[in-house]
Length: 80
Length: 192
Image (tube, rainbow over all chains, first blue to last red; front, side):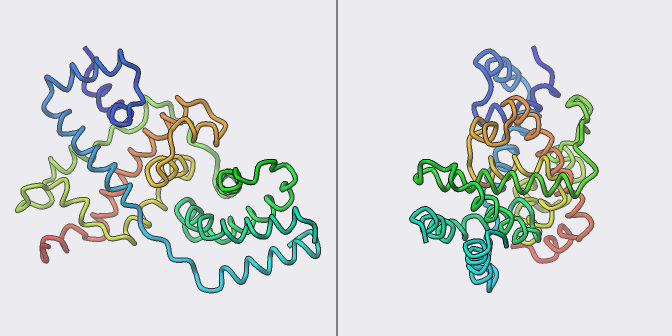
């Protein structure tokens, strides 16, 4: 059976269904017996939600105007 | 103006807000420079774009490559530490051992809720760029690992190992940032 280090290393890939069926089974066998790694998995799932909550981005004032000017310069001169 | 150039202007204007958002997530305060470089490269290579329907993905790929070029110029090179030698940092264990919020019934979740948006930006900016790129693309942009691998021109297993390292770095930086900024102390003084 895999050890905790190996199980933890693969937890995110496991959650994202990026491990093959054999590895998946080995991880599930480990999780069935290891309380600490179950906690690690729940936290990894929480971290995924935390990162997916991604911070909002504000478009800076004037960006569109500056980029419009860049596109215009490219059209006219071929360079910025 | 040729029809192709008119199409470029229209597509570039349409994509600009999305490009800036992605650039901000990848490169923080350097976002505008990267968008500018992306527009120049897209303009120069526009004749190669055969299917205008594919334009959003095409612009996005150019932007990611511009960001990576920028990081390469800006850094001392990639971290080639073998995967087995990545520090075995577990934020889950650190939180459990240190118990930074002793009155909390769900200390791990409350720890994450201590971070405001600007804190997440600051922590993300501390993660090495070569790991930040796949982290942002997979976990913030919601892309499949296989698509990210194609975009970065790397094998899927390599991207998975970058993601593993990136998450370790991100978790480590979260903890260090929380300690440096006294986020947990502030949380204990004004529980929400």
